[in-house]
Image (cartoon, rainbow, N blue to C red; front, top):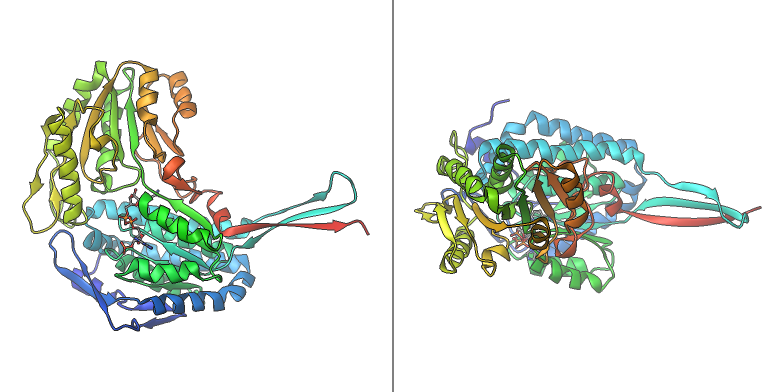
Length: 488
Ligand code: NAP
């Protein structure tokens, strides 16, 4: 189906809060202007939830909890599957909506519709596979029953960088497990979540099972929800500092938490790598989403024997990338989410250069309107540079060199993060050693993108707790109950 024009599409997006099956104005009467990061223009003005609205959304989720938990798993699955089908029908519109509010090139937004949609389909299938155990206890005195129950009302907080996938990756497993939810998207990109809520409503989701609050005061609105003893689970995707704050708040009621936090992914290229594959992998791992992915390669750790050739080839490709609004044909580099993101990328590049790194491509902001930064390559980056410590979240390749495998592992693991690593080698034994030695929750071996709804996504160390997707994803929303039945 062809996409509607931008204004026609925006007119179909809800502009209110979704609470208890009703689209309602915020109780404070405030509003949020959602802007296009490529132009700065206001796309749509939507309701701004107050703390009272947040609690009203939780009330609705609590009210719907028992009946949703009692709904047949097949029926829960069918609703998710219905939403998946509706999303496929409207995939061009959803892609355009994401490009408008977030800035990513349209082709990438279409890729996110596929990826994000898969969570609806995958968990529609998992809803009917929630299983338990039944067996005799070792003493032979009774039967042990292990069953799974929905955890209860959940609060789901999502970031702006993947407006569809970060929402469906939480909503779909929660609903499949029998939990009701309150979802809070980022203020910068709330439109896709509102659109998805409407799809689920159309697919037959009962009132109160999914509630959406959009707000410009995320801390003030979230705190009372997290402090409410009726909430049973908090799932957050975002930065590590905000994750830490939320974990402290969640500790008060010993709330179940899932935390998908920041990354600082190493991208290791060994001397025996296939350089064609490594360069293609690097472009995907770095420039997808204009570098604004938690899985983005942040540190290119390249063997000295191939570093010059690798950097030359990457710089050549970077030089050919077209910068522009994501809706334009052939654009590879859309805007960053806002001017602060441009400032951060530029500061990190300037810091590395001031310490002695070599700038081989890009390295400048692009004049507005919009928040653009040139795709950039810096090589020979000194180890004390900030760019190796911080998540860049922008289109910047930073290269450091190593001499032997032990040094590569040490450099790769030298971070408090541990989300994903990428390794390029044609030596299978070395690749297997890296699986053991790299401290990350995920690894791509000779590949630059690995996310899949069927795979457990998540990190170790300060990249977070828990897994989303895969067989594991639904367990984040289930609690295990053990029952002993003594012999009669
Ligand atoms: P962020 O600033 O931490 O915000 C994430 C979400 O938390 C937004 O909805 C934000 O709302 C909300 N928030 C901020 N402060 C809050 C508070 N005090 N209480 C409750 N909610 C609060 O992160 P971001 O800039 O949106 O996203 C980028 C970060 O997400 C990066 O670090 C990236 O690595 C990480 N990320 C991780 C994964 C993963 O799976 N591991 C995936 C994607 C992104 P407002 O923005 O409206 O305030």
